[in-house]
Length: 157
Image (cartoon, rainbow, N blue to C red; front, side):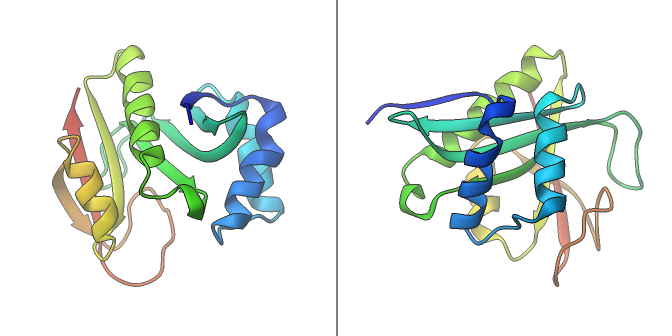
C-alpha cells in the first residue's frame, strides 16, 4: 500500500482525533482545540500520513522564537501518533522525514526534539536521523510529562 505524507488541512481534524483515540492519546476538547489551531497556525505545522486515503498517523512541529532555559529558540518536532496497526511499518519515519524537510525548507539550520529518558524507541528512531543529546532536565518548553528525566536533542540540517 502506498504511504504519503502531506500537510494537514482543517478537514483532517476528525481523522487526527481518530488516530489519537486509537493510540490511547488525549482526545478531549483541549486536544481538539490545539489541533484545530495548529493546522492553521504560522508557527506550527501538522502533517498527516495517509495510506489508501485513510489517515494512519499525524505529527507536528512548532517554532519557538525565544529560548526557555536550556531549550534554545528554534524549530521543534513536537507530537507524533501512529495507529497501532501501522506502527513499525515506516509511518513514523516518513513523518520525521517530512517534518525535517519542512523545517529545512523554512530556512532553519537545526531542528530539536525532546522526550522522556525512558522512551528508548523514540531515542533510537531519532538517532537514525542524526539527533544528538544536548541537555537533560525535568522539563522543556513547559510540556508536562509523567516521571523520569527529559532529554533534549538537536540535529543540524
